[in-house]
Image 1 (spheres, chains in turn blue, yellow):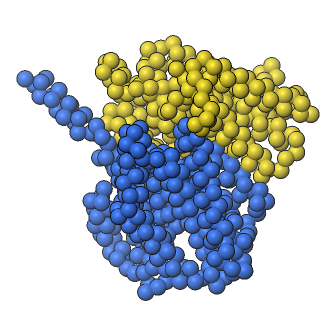
Image 2: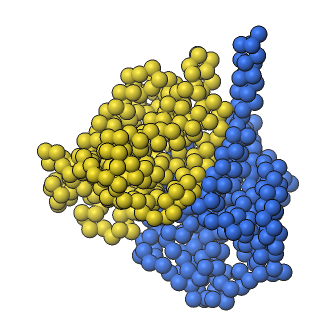
Image 3: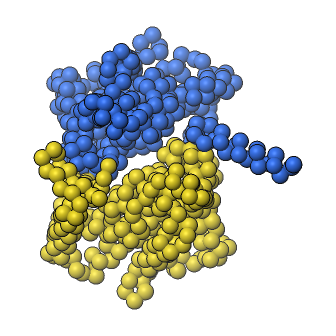
Length: 310
Length: 319
């Protein structure tokens, strides 16, 4: 699917406006917004689960950060990310202790988190008066990145390093590929799962905090559409829904691909609805090309035709 | 054999576990019923109507979602958009007459989902990704064709889908018909039963000679038809439409499916269970409203209860 990314870039270049600094910047800004959510979701997919609650965590963490971080932004980060970790741990505990499937638990989690966000904000948008932080986060550095996107990149790098060079990565992939076998082999899969969900909560929370700070406000309905995009990014990035396959770098690539697509389309002056059409078409193409039984079907179909001719 | 495991210390198995789970379900159901009945104003025509209305619209989509979940394909994120798009098509085709418009809308819903179902069923494309692709294509396509404007009915005939019959909202009748047809297809036809088998164990199903591709495709087709029905009812209710009509329906629908007890992994569940699920969620919402909870608290409590009910169901299941 990296090949698809390259093809995309080539197609976009036909527009001529693509490779400007401004475009790269907007790509990186989008990346900063969606990247961590996709990372969290992707991590949960690696262990064969699906963390629907990331969308809710983003909103809640953003609100908490805005509410607690007025005097000291780092305090807001602490509380926001902390909330994400707590939500992840609670859901992870429910899942492992009661042997439940993640979709149900995280769906309930999503609704609960969104509800909490509404209650906390009393359904109003809360402004974040610390403008210096808002501007500082988004100011372009060298025209390409901002503090926000650098922070997100840093998280990805840390995740990738942790996955590759420590046993965490092996444990996660093992739990995802075959949980029972891993458990038999002595791996404490429960802890892995709780850890993964804590990480995905933290990741999404950080994304929410950054976003709220940079928008200067936190709203309960921020990023309600984030789930499909994050899921698509993770899947495009090579994470398999049935677990055991994928990596943070792959997820980053997936997010980048989608962001390049979106920014590229805007840059060459395409209208919004065509974005969706093109995104949909490309996602469909990826879904088809990546499908496990594509080769089998095509071969079977060919054999069928050959037989009939003979 | 079912196993109940609440941590290493509590371990029940077999019949005792099943009885315990059944008991807890009955108690929970009773609690909800008691909670509802003790709420002033619940048993009034106004609230019953509100209840039926809420159930009917989301319920149709939930029924459709059930089929997708049963075949082991988790959920579809584009049914909400299918609802909206079908509503738009219905409104735009009213100039051909009500029946033709309904047919066209349903056909549209069916085609959209059939393509997705075929891809998922034949080459096992990722169902979530395919549904997201469908979502994007629908939104983009609709924006392209409508230019972002609301669509108004191009003809007469909306009355068929509005109003009451013998005091019951017409939408509820259509919904119950959908439930009935859905359940009959599921348990009474060969294809329906195949869907459940495919969800339960796709490899065994293929080995047993079941047409997995057609089973999954038909499941998606039914989901599309149900979404189209919901779209038609919505279009009639509001008299005009845009793509926001069905937004968010996907999550409520899958919540209803899971609350009803259908397994997210597929292979277990039924349309009737989804009916229960939709009813439970709607009752909770209406009750919270009647008891004067603020909108935020309503949302929160509904979410927590959904979580608890889902936990309740899956406790009895083996991993």
